[in-house]
Image 1 (tube, rainbow over the protein chains, first blue to last red):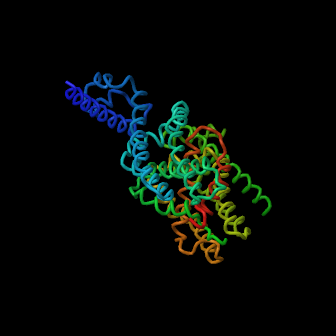
Image 2: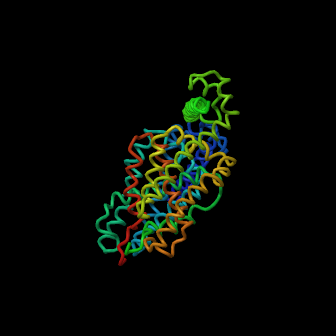
Image 3: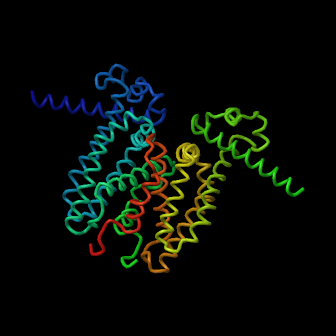
Length: 204
Length: 204
């Protein structure tokens, strides 16, 4: 009985993901405000009504896309980063995880980096939930680096986290906007080198 | 005679700028592709035909907005930066000039940071002209800093210029997309501090 339930749950969660991917594709192409739930259903290859077995409405689809994508990112970050010892390598891995998610989920990224920035309501919700969580992970890396004497003690860890987010998020937006397919992940190493070591010599 | 010509030229260039500002406003609000030259004329408070005394068509308006904004930026950068001696302060001033242009000309910035990124044709033209010029200025600052022993000699000046552009351009795009009015220029100092000095201590 239990086994059967978990198979059903697995099928349900798979179907949910199919609908979310279809929604991201539709929102990315037509824009969130123009998109219709029926377009999402058609793209997912299911009946309109089926979407409503999983999601309340279009806004619920949007919110769920982000819970899903950010959930994937945060769970990877929270499982992979604590295993790394060097705080410099923690920052590098964090940037790699961020950029590889953007590259892998381009439709979600289009919706997130462009469409949603116009929505004050969404951005406020994002800032107090996922973004707060994201900045917290970065801040803890910086604080650990400072305790170990590896990062400059006079830096404000909150501000460093904000600058790092500003850099990564900005580069991600521009990657999404440019139609070229040069890799975003490839920019991590030169960017992190400067972020860690700066451009000046130590005696400048 | 000469004096009269220069007054006429001054009036012409002023009228041109009024039309360009109107065009930026219209493009920023309606999107370039939806905008009509007649909307630009109405916003500028002139007859449709008058626009055509100055510009060939909508595309010419778009191209001219950028020649104008980038011209302003490059001429300020090229006059102000050579006067500064410390290459670190040159980089800071460059970032300040970039961000203050974006803040001052928000309509132009909306068109440039968002609308145009979709246009492969425009972006290709931009990359080989203004962007090449912009990167060149940055590269020369980095090379000068390296010659003076102030910037790390192992850095590739071209790559540093590209990373710096990536950071500034990305932060500018996100500032334009967010409707909040927190200052972009205020981010220069924390960002430049990290860009110059990195987050690590010199003995890390």
